[in-house]
Image (cartoon, rainbow, N blue to C red):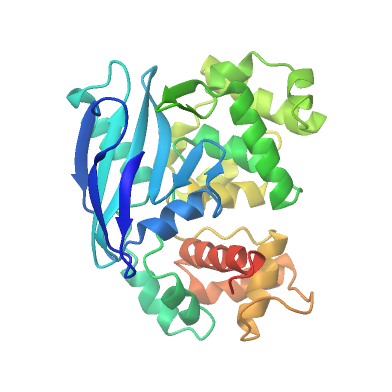
Length: 335
């Protein structure tokens, strides 16, 4: 791990990595301000130390990357402050070298949303009585992105029609069972399972991880399609939003809810809005009522939430992210 000496104002001074041996690659990145690494990285892990293949511990975001079949562990720390942010990135791995730095930088930047311009959303949100308190509370929160469409799709399917607690159990179990391990500093980290690793599993194998039979079938269909080349999910990056939604909904097990979450969390589109999400409906209702959090169990329907959200277009992905950031803090008793 690295030495993390944070000040009360959120800025931090970093020293060299305190880990076995020097990193294979190290460099710095400058996110587009305002950028709050603590808010953004902890959003990836749902305010926990570990979620799926992602770890956020003591100010450090850690993730195993697949560099064309070679695994590398990246450790990302934050220097500076929200308005003058600087990220330091260390990468470890056998066979990893300076030639990998551009790909590591691209992937880390994508995962942490460092290039996103929050200014247009903030101009809209600060003029909105419901969103203004949220953007002040979570200023600098960027929208994290999944490493691949495959990962985002599998993670979304595991979360369908279950509580957030159950979704976390399913996601962690899948990563632990099928994610390639990376040993570093006495700890084991795991990459998100490769399509080929999941393609070789059976429904019974995934049922043993507590997936329903239907979810197991969906995950295996997708993994086998991607592994065989029959399903090219990454090609969707070049499509308009409506075409992405249409193509995703052709996949067994995928509906508008899942498609819109992927617009937000893996295609980096600005105007996704999963109106069928019950938690989102409750929080949109609360915002429209001028409340900090839902309190009486009343919620809009999906159609009502969609209509209400039009005031935030074309920045609904950001509004959704900030609403869920608040929802998680409410669940933790912090708001």
